[in-house]
Image (cartoon, rainbow, N blue to C red; front, side, top):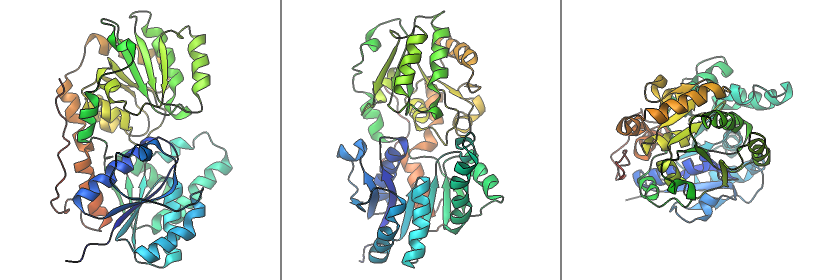
Length: 387
């Protein structure tokens, strides 16, 4: 029997962000469900690629910038003729549409939109906004489908395009894997988690403006007036030195630990007293979903877009206004005093399993109605109980 043509996933691995981790999760899920899957990469500088924990082959295009990859991607499409090409990240999305036009092949092209564009560019210059939005208006409608990671992201794209693209579908991120639960059972190396009776808050993400860690630090200062808690921040980024300086200025130097990149953050999330998300925009925050899957209490800003959908309008866990350390501090204290039901938190993460997400991605990639994917052999990744 002739094997099916491969499904290709296209992006640039340039760090250790959530998109890279999500694409590897999805690639593994599609491989088990469909068969031949290949990652076509611009850059391959990612710790997620280098740790060797994935089984999907990676083909480097050998260039440094995504838009420079268009001729080589077009050649790849002509030679390999994949059944579908899924692009992730905006520049990869643009390059995928242009490469197919150059290749003149019938490959189905699907784009993934992972952030709320209007919020991401709200404080940019007029030129910067145009450089981002004009290509989207021109190129995205030429794709066969656009996958938005949340309803808020899809509605934001509709407003940007001035119409409702009939090719846009909402698919939750493939965040929750069986391996997550196994990794979460590993011991936490940080000494603060060994201190009984001293709550530890955890924040996680790239240290950038988007994540608004200054609000989290100011909220911690207020929480510590009532409870002697500490904060562990997982992740690295360009704002690290400024955040460390702010922590010293708030007299929090001994109460905040900036760990940098952590290969396995799940024991930290599992053992956190509260996971805190302080973002001013998102698409669908993976760390929030992972914390829920592990039954960890969470407090999140009601930013565009994602937390409100994940937390079902605040019914699952509390939402707080953006850039409001007073409200965040009050809510953290309330959650510490009244911990939520862990099973309810875990159930909220169910739509974000690799199994659930990969089946829907496969339908879109093959041009089938959602829900028509054939039965596969994916392991179940439904929320589990952890001892």
